[in-house]
Length: 161
Image 1 (cartoon, rainbow, N blue to C red):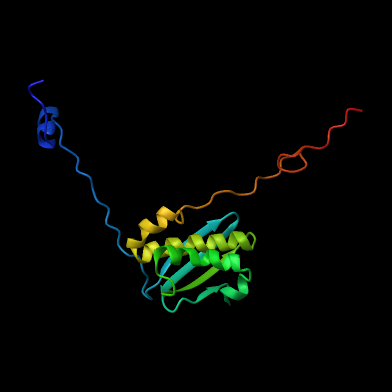
Image 2: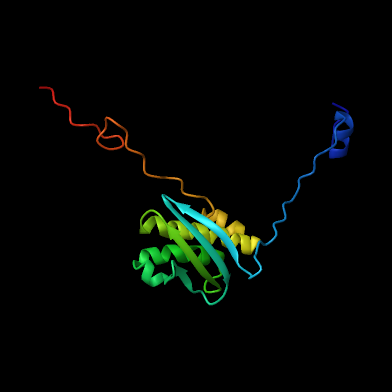
């Protein structure tokens, strides 16, 4: 055990292979000619197209203000979460078009799109958004109905006689 290997260079010399250094991924901001970042968000059957740009914090969904489109306070809270986690509340204007699903799924889709667009606009926000789980698409969807069943899994009532 006299000939111990202490450095990476010694290891590469002994093994005859070059040492692989870890590459650090440097993310560049992605913005269009108008200074906006774009992303799509998905939740259940809802798909949202989201554009963000610096502004006063106004959120427009399908041409309506967020207070009109998402009337329930819980849904408005869902839309504010990415900005609160990233610490940029009231700094970005959001324009979103969303279709499919119900209101809760649409709010989740817009939240997912806002999170992805924020990390594209400012890559330094990626860590906080990823740690909160906002960059991961919630892939739970309604299971399809099978033939011979009353619902997706529920069978017809069994009768012995």
